[in-house]
Length: 73
Image (cartoon, rainbow, N blue to C red):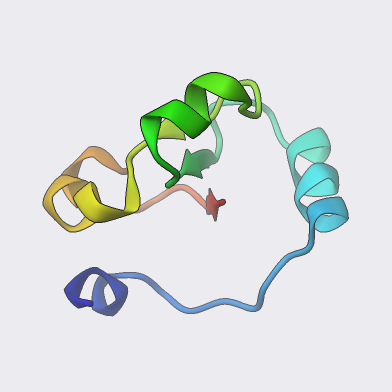
């Protein structure tokens, strides 16, 4: 996919690593991005997460701040 070319690859982070990162950083200094479908997002989500379904991501990359770390799930 084209959008993958715009992101800097990083190593995967497990759930505990993500939890630790979120707890150690002030909200607003990173973006927590939920790429699931709206129904899944409405059913259960991580507080503070932003929804951009994976199928829409390439068209909505401009909504993301490239200067902030991005945690995607």
